[in-house]
Image (cartoon, rainbow, N blue to C red; front, side, top):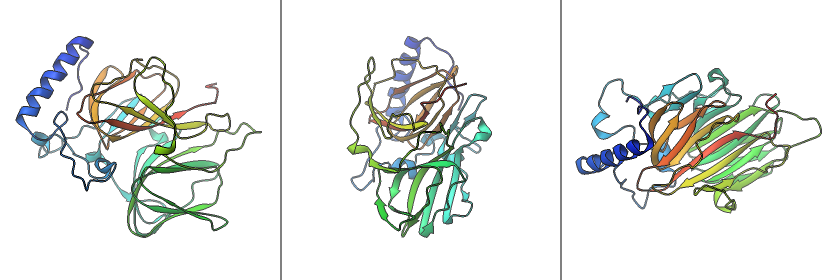
Length: 301
């Protein structure tokens, strides 16, 4: 699919609304139609069972919405390539963002199967884990265990001994980066869940924001959960020195990256390099929720 050209904002929204009305009348699936959500569908079910493409493109050989540029990438689910994760047992992983792109962190999906177990990260590498399907057990060096369900997360400091195990199956998203040590600061293990985190003020914006990690100096990155109701969009057209790694957990919409506009939906991953222009609008009929990495508390020099 070709990216949207640079319309004026008014023309772009008129085009989007017209396209949505046409597609809704023609098909029950796709970016602009109302999704059929069953009561048995789990939270974030579209991440592990995504709609790979609009129905009229699903059988088109070679079709993908994925794109890689110098300063951003969109990796959609039909492009995910899973393989055994090094030193993990019974686990398949798909790396979505790595330093090969130009990032200072890695982001990957790990599908843990029956009787699976994780491997530790490299030396001096910190790790953040968010559960999108199933449940896992985290055990530390003192043999203290914690069960993690969907929508729960844990931050693990660099060189923190731990293991993840799974008795059935689970899908997690993992962020890893080499810790930017300031000498006198130390991070701590943090457990949490999205619903336990308070909504924060967002002056000039209408989306809902939660931060999953402390904003204090020891932490060199944070993970945000951002919620948009249908029709809501970012007021600020962001251009900044921070990097982003994003996973859409729910919903669908339009993301501006650089000079292009891309339709996105749950299951899509996005990397944004420093200073790439970026903007989002939720154009589906259900809430958009995305999880987004942001490096913080360190000088860019």
